[in-house]
Image (cartoon, rainbow over all chains, first blue to last red; front, side):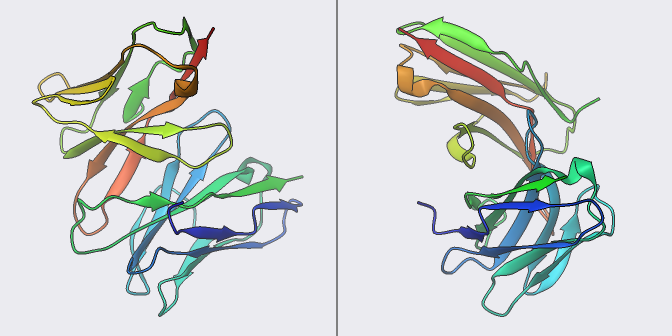
Amino acid sequence: ETGVTQSPTHLIKTRGQQVTLRCSSQSGHNTVSWYQQALGQGPQFIFQYYREEENGRGNFPPRFSGLQFPNYSSELNVNALELNDSALYLCASRTSTSSYNEQFFGPGTRLTVL
Amino acid sequence: RKEVEQDPGPFNVPEGATVAFNCTYSNSASQSFFWYRQDCRKEPKLLMSVYSSGNEDGRFTAQLNRASQYISLLIRDSKLSDSATYLCVVKTHGTASKLTFGTGTRLQVTL
C-alpha cells in the first residue's frame, strides 16, 4: 500500500450535479496531484497543489477545482457534471524537496455520471 | 498528436515469451521517463525509471533514446503475473512537474 487514501471508492451522480472527491496524502508528502483516467486511456493531469495553492494545471475547464488543507489532504470538486466526466479519478502525492521524487498514487475514486 | 504514444495492444503471449513495448514522446523538454504498471481497476504503480544508458531490473529492461524520443520496455521470460497494462510516462520538471501518460499497452500472458 502507498499510504495514499481516497474516498469514496465509487460514486454515481447525474448530469448537472456537483461532486467532491477526497484524498489523504502519504505522511510527509506536501504535494498532491489529481489525474482523470477515462476508460481505455492513460491518466490525464488535472492540477497540482503545494502548500494549499494550485501551482500547475492541465487542460481542464474551471468547473474542475480543488483545495489543499494544512494537513496536506486535498479535495477535487467538479461542478455541472457531464457524461464524459465518468472516469477513475486518481490522486498522487510526493514530497516537494525534489520534483524528481516519486509520486505515489491512491486507489482512485470511480465516478459514474448518468 | 498525443504527447506520448503507445501501441494499445493487446499483446497476447505465451508464458516464457519475450515481449517488447515501444513508446514515443513529442516534448523534447521532457526530462524523466518511466514505465508504470496498472492492473485492472487498480492505480498505476511505478515499474521502473528509464535512462539513456539503459537499465535492467530482473526480467525487465528499459531503454531511452533521447535523439529519437523513443522509450522501450523488454520483458523476458513472461509470467502469468505480468499480465497488466504498461504505461509509458514522461515528466517535465519545474514549478508543477506533471506526469504525462501514454494510453497504455495491455499485455495478456497465457499458459
